[in-house]
Length: 265
Image (tube, rainbow, N blue to C red; front, side):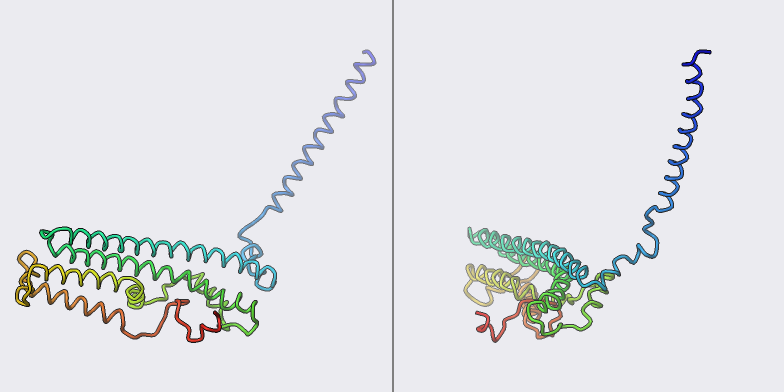
């Protein structure tokens, strides 16, 4: 055997031993990594957000992010409400233009417009109630965090953190449906419905000048004019009562007129 062959035969076992040692190190390293693997279900990781409650810096940072998120939701739902209002205004303007564009136009098209605007009112009422969920959270943060930062006079609600936590866990509609409908009527829909019903009366008087003739002209198909007139009168009375009926405000953060607004200006 030559010297080179003997050296090679001595080197081979050493190489195999080194490779075996390297493999054992890799296996042990993998086992160590698996033992230190992140466990999201561990008690420490589940309660990681609770640690921020005791750290003012982390808490205020989280409140800033929460405020931006809730403000984005509020803006999105405010846009949905405005879109429904735009539909109602466009529909009203279109029907008025068409109804008075010729003498042969039927008067009941304006009553159909009243029905459609009422449907839009129902849609907007539901959207307003959902919108108030996010707006109430924004108002809690503004009243108890940001207002207190600007002027440290104390918080508006001593348990505001508990209120916000409960609402985040179980979101709930806070505005009654009657109040929501009343507010949308006061803002937009009472004026639209009044214009449509006023235009309906004007449309009837174009063809008759006596009270008896007015009632007869209000007939729709086989439905007598008296029935139609009474139904319209009852409907408008209900709208007026719902619009101006006094009640305690439940909506959080609804814009109100201030008697001392001169100080701000």
